[in-house]
Length: 221
Image 1 (cartoon, rainbow, N blue to C red):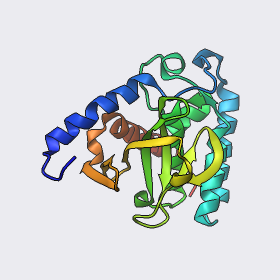
Image 2: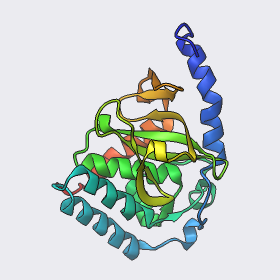
Image 3: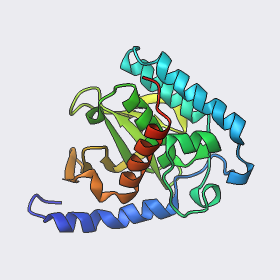
C-alpha cells in the first residue's frame, strides 16, 4: 500500500475487513442468553465493585491499573451480541455489560478502555485493536497500551489475564486500531492514520452513550 494511494481507496480497502469483523464475532468461551443473565441486585453489586476498583486503583502505578482492570472484566461471561442483546452487532457500555454479566470481545476491550480512562490513563496511550486470532481463525478485539509513543503495546485480552507485549502474542494478527483521537490501518511497518474516530459509527455511538450514563450516574472521582 504505497504513499500515493488516495484516502478513499484506503477506506475501501479496509471496509470489507471492518464488515467481516462486525459480522463474524470474536470467538466464544461461553454464550449466555440475556434472559438468563443476572438480575438487578447482582448487577448492582458488580457496578459497586467497579466503582470500588476505580477508587482503590486511582493512585497506583499504571501497570497495576492495567492488571486490575483486565482481571476485573475478564471475570464476566462471553456472550454473542445476537443472543445477548438481540442485535447482530451491538457495542455495550461498561454499565450495560456489568448489569447483564456479559458481552463480546468489543465490550470487554471498550470496558477496559473506558475504565482506564477514568483512572487517568491518557487516550494517546491506548488503542482498541481489531485483530485476527490465528489460533481460533476468527476476528477478535483487544486493548493495546503504549507506555510511550511508538513503543510496542502491551495486550489486554479477555481470553487471558496475562498482559504480554504484542510481539509475544504471535497468535494475533493486527488489522486496524482506534481510540478517541484517530483510526489507523496496521501496516507491515507501523500504522497509517486513516482519519478521525468519527469514521466508526458504533464507536461514536458508544462514547456518547457512556457519557450520558456517567452524567446520569456519576463515577467515583
